[in-house]
View 1: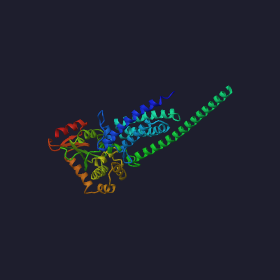
View 2: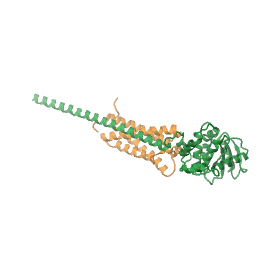
View 3: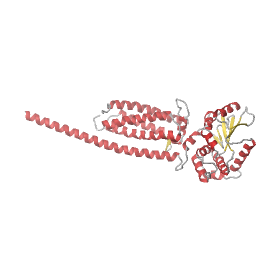
View 4: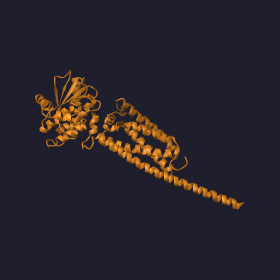
Length: 143
Length: 255
């Protein structure tokens, strides 16, 4: 099966990474102000997840790592060449793996679902798929 | 002439083949590097997962729901065994025994609903009072909760205890178990907590006092609830309502 055109993959990745920056920045800003994200459909899931001790890694809010990851993914999507293809894949793999773990925590440990975290997990999964196809399909080929 | 162009064609063919070979070789090498990097990323994610788990679960404890409980009360003021704003007009009293399985089911279902709807909003505060009816272990557990309350983690202790409750009067309420709960609840000074929970004139006296108070109110079981507010007739006993709505309505009527 032929991989989609690299330009298309990069465009979709640019859109997803930009959206991801927005989601992660919202969570980080709200929590820095002492609050917690508001679940659009109501409920206290977002509050419970944000206030749980799992929301920080080494004392830093996980959303901050999310912003950094999405910024790198945006840069990888905007740039051409093998370095961008490989960096995009590696960062997306890390983000996807950690998103899986966070989703497991939400369901089985915290027992609450935060829509913003789900949105981020979906975006990271999409970005992983796009970057994996881009890497396998186009690395070593002319940009 | 034809011999020359044939040689050039063969040369171009050879160069193109070499170039494609180089490209394939480079692609293979890059994919190998990518695979190695992917492996390193997987290791890094595994390390991050271990760090997150250990920092959130209080190390190697076997407690359930540590993160859930500590998240539940985040942002709500606590003083002693009172949860909520001091200025709240209505006080909801909960008389409970930490070994009581019915109290556990209330702690997991009905009480969090009331906390979310009435305590978090500042409409009411909720005060836990020990009503030790099951046995000696309940007194130790209750005193440990009172001692945790002195360090601002009373409700975390109570809720975490309920979520890790064993079979009543089975001997599971040991010093080790209580210490594990205190650590999981985030009690900052365990040495001081140990000292306080064994204080005959302090925490243990407090447990005895609240149990006597429950008896004076003619409470017959745990958990029992009561409200005190500007429109209540003193301490209004609600008994053991089976749903959060009844408690919420009582708070509204008392306010």
